[in-house]
Amino acid sequence: MSIEFFTRLPLHGETQFLPGDPRNRGDWHRGGPSTGAVSAFNVGDHFTYIDYLGQIAKAAEINGFGGALMVNAPSGEEPWTVCSLLARETRTLKFVTAFQPYHYTPWVAVQQAATYQRATGNRLVWNIINGGSDAIQRQVGDFSDHDERYDRAIEFMDVVKGYWHNENFHYEGKFYKAEGGGLRGPLKKAELPLICTAGSSIPAREFAAKHADFYLMRAEHPDEIATLIADIRERALKYGRTDIRFGLSIDVITRETEELARTEAKRFFDEGIARGAVKAVAAHAGLRTARKLSYENQFAQKAETQGFDDFFIHPNVWTGFGYIGIPPGCALVGSHENVVARIREYNAIGIDLFFLAGYPHLEEAYRLGEHILPHFRSERSELNRPSPAPLELRSANGPSGA
Ligand SMILES: Cc1cc2nc3c(=O)[nH]c(=O)nc-3n(C[C@H](O)[C@H](O)[C@H](O)COP(=O)(O)O)c2cc1C
Image (cartoon, rainbow, N blue to C red; front, side, top):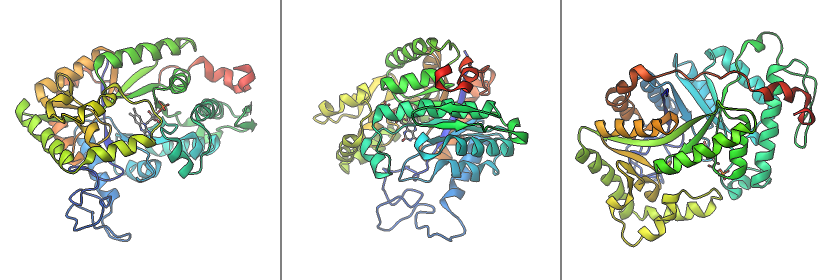
């Protein structure tokens, strides 16, 4: 089984302390004297937060990461723009931009991506997201409900693939129509970005089964991940697909010894408890319509005990970050040796793309690059596109022919 490592860039501020802390790098803190780099940033300053992100991207590349995940949140920098800004500062790093079909028309997305691919040597990956909160969707102007967003996403990707592979594409759908059009001339040389998606609702799984090269998950207990993988594989088979692959987003606190790693995790945990971060998480969870992960369901019971150790759901798999409000919520905490062993365990159940990050992202890119990634050197394989799905040919005639 192959394995590949990407990292994640902090597009809404560094979190070497709790989110909002003025000591963090970036200006996402809640006022007060700030000490972090670019935390007192004014528009027009010669060194911007993007420069800091550029440092992380370069560190990731130097340390052997194959790519970087860019998260899309209304409170953060817009990821595709950041990908474009950083592509020319790096040479090999792939950039995973998250966006919703709602953000673009299929044609705009196709043309933008083709331009990007030509300029960067096909280093763009798409993470098609569909919103985990109706309330936040409405804040940004999208009033479609959860399941409708996935129906739209399926059509969006039908049309994107149709435009990408045809010069004269026709489509008549519920959300989109096309009468001719498609990539022509030199833009045709670009490769369609690899498609990632996430979400554990049934419509999200169906969308992934039909259109995704990679189905991404937030880390949970390996048994739950294995169950999810089996379900997605089965759904993909309905579309004649056996090539869907799986990615896992998980933070890492890796140190020379177990004790040193736990001490660093406990630093975050104790600060989170002291600052009442738990309440902030509960408020945020109220906004979310997405399924709670199984370990999140147990948070309410844990409010009584709040013990650091209670949040280990498996050896070295710690969910305390979720409890104190640091996404994605789950981290590998342990000695370098044990972190490597846990990565192998997730790899064995079907994860072949890992998004690993630590705090601060810059320093931890070096630590991961020096102590974790070298163990996998001979097993690494660059991401590439599997052979085209049969769907691409059929969608050229629109949904009636699909
Ligand atoms: C690795 C990973 C990355 C994600 N990135 C984003 C993101 O950048 N922006 C976003 O709004 N949601 C992101 N999500 C959330 C999902 O796209 C999805 O909205 C959420 O899981 C709820 O989907 P569901 O309600 O269909 O289950 C991400 C999820 C995962 C597992």
